[in-house]
Length: 71
Image 1 (cartoon, rainbow, N blue to C red):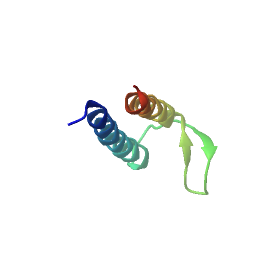
Image 2: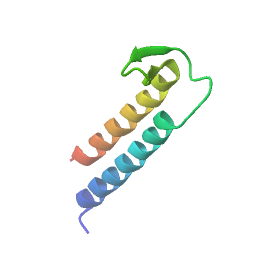
Image 3: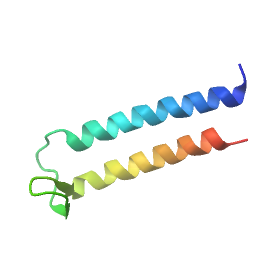
């Protein structure tokens, strides 16, 4: 098996796992999630407690892209 193909597969699997993680963290019902900093709809918005989750996801997906595109 080509090492580059394995790296891309590992990156894809990691991206799927990170996406599942951020979805479960953002859409789960939590108490004490902080004030709303961005209103999306009348009943949904981005809370201050969501920011670290999104930042962690961005770092993880950025690492996946780096792994997948590394020569």
